[in-house]
Length: 451
Ligand code: UD1
Ligand code: MG
Image 1 (cartoon, rainbow, N blue to C red):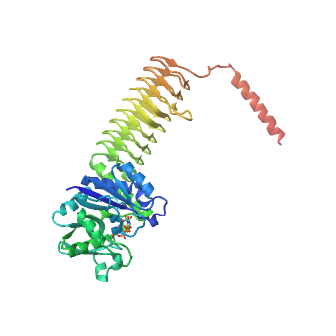
Image 2: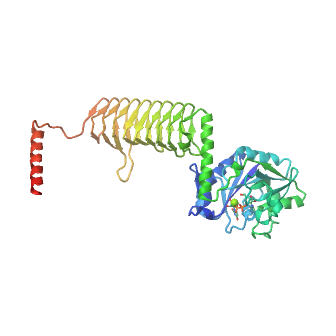
Image 3: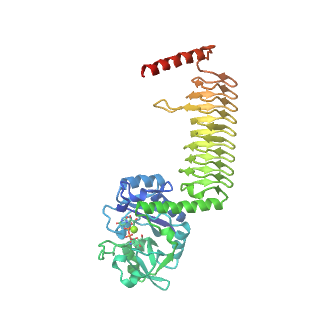
């Protein structure tokens, strides 16, 4: 049975108080919409249709970046959840299989839950995802009759007795596509909000002699985001789950609450993460590495046995081979650091390669940008770059070469050579004492003059 995802993402999200459409706000460095689309991938969908409205252009761009094959349809006016799903009618014309409706602002539904919904379709025509709410608030209530779902009543339209129910509607559902679009056409807006309610599908399906059931999931999975505080809460929830999973996999987090992970952070067994480390997207760390305190990593790969930080910054394209050392106040960008190489203090290595076992002295800078273009620096194996060397790219330093401290390298340095490019030192015997005497005398005259 093939599946089409319809992801509702047209809402304004007024309470976010933002120029950015709500579904594009990030949790652990991926938009809520991306989280929802990634969850949906568990069903291996044949089609994905995102319903956009507010900020549709931004949403369309984001969708294409996440999944080139996903389609975006426009809901010009937000007339309700049923009206929203109906916007996918044309795109899914002739589609045979199930439609699974997801919300773009409900990012945490699990693969397991989606699979259970689809599995439940073998015994029911329409499957609704519900949850036991600790505080049911304004959620729609599921009115059950045994295993069968009788109807969903929106809070605004509910009686006192119905409001007392705690089994609530997540909004997610699975239904045969043909049946769903057939029934959607019959939904009106005669209710307390004057909106077209997707929830009315339940009663319509039953009236048509179809079976309807509800599958339950943990409330945390249906957590919706409506405000910045909800966003922070959702992020915190993501973080604590992701940290627990990493520790389960054998990663040491010395102070778990201070480590900020991205949605896709991968860390190998026996790696130790010290306190206050931040992960941007696209980081892979292999086993047995050490990431010391206050480091910031994104888009990089750290191999076994590498030591990073404290206070290091690894930017996109940083590739650290085994047993490399990247020390304090060092920034690495788009650069390969080969096995056993060390960049231990106060350096910038960008658009570069550093060969095996080379040592980069304190304060070394690759001058990679000329104001218009970026250029590469290549350093060979077992070379020694003296402290405060400036490497003006494009430039190459060979194997077993050296640069003297303070050298500005503007020409290639061949294998085994020593490059020195700095003013020659001259010592003047006795001159320091004389100078001091002159300066002290001058100060004494000034002090006297001001009395
Ligand atoms: C909906 C459900 C309610 C459920 C709750 C769970 C209905 C009628 N009610 O209510 O039973 O308990 O979700 O959170 O379905 N959207 C559009 N276009 C629209 C309207 C909504 O794309 O015209 C999108 C929103 O962006 C959002 C989702 O659909 O992602 C849900 O809409 P929302 O207005 O939040 O519905 P609720 O009133 O919360
Ligand atoms: Mg809502």
